[in-house]
Image (cartoon, rainbow, N blue to C red):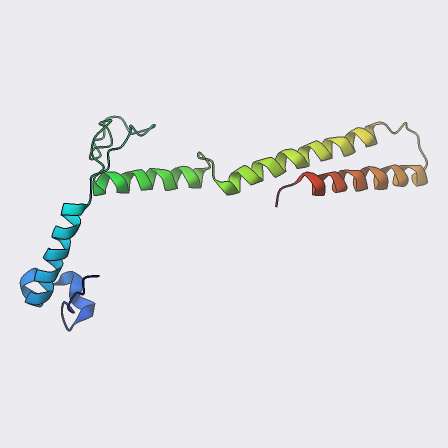
Length: 148
């Protein structure tokens, strides 16, 4: 661990201060830390990102095998978040939702099939009995098959 001296007494203004307004010892320690990181960190090569916007030149993203820079990583994260929010990219949540939606559709279809088998006209007691049995079977099946 590399301790860093407090950069300035007025912490609320840190983002507005230039290096010459910060504590000199802090600036030296910060630069030393940057040097350590720069000498030990290896640039990450990246693969081509599908769906990269043509005509735009995000740093390194449009050049397969280029070096992943900070701005390129930020652009990749932004694209990933957009894709997640739009449901374009599988996540644990939407995979489970899809699985459960399919299970629900199967069991609703089995209920509908059972009810379609009722020959009309039918007395209310027989209809209620068929409904209860089909609904119980569909609910039990869904509970058994659903995930989560």
